[in-house]
Image (cartoon, rainbow, N blue to C red; front, top):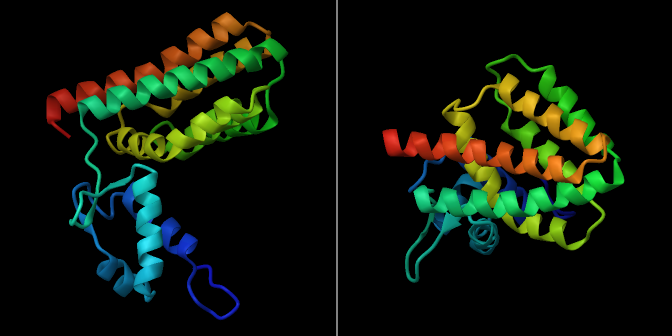
Length: 216
């Protein structure tokens, strides 16, 4: 874990470790994440624990009501629908702008290659996220990437849930990524926008269907 020159654990290291534990499901939805728990678990002072918790609240991974401990969010149906609608709007607009340049970002191609190399039933969401981030960051716009960054914490949280339930196969996701890259390379903004939106909303629909059936 990262420390400063005095050997003190830094808040960003605690934040990263907590975030990883939550995304991995080690800390379950609804579980309380208190300053005392974080302080004891990581051997840090409470102010350091508080900073890490506050960052996770800001990212939408934890939620906190006044005078109550922060808890891992439970993403409900309305949360998922709203989040994926926002994500689809931002990413499809960015990819349309990217396609107008007909230039595929190297980072997006690299992420796609990593996804193709995975086994069919392997965990893929981190690579999927890297692919989408690369597309948005590669677009000739400064504001859409900033908007996307604001959604990233919740997006990653939601994608981890999709992956945990294996609602989409690696091959299915890779095939859709390939079609998006082809549309960008061909300089077809309308097709690239359509494919990106459809790709994101397909994940939304699978997760919503799972929630409707299983309630989690």
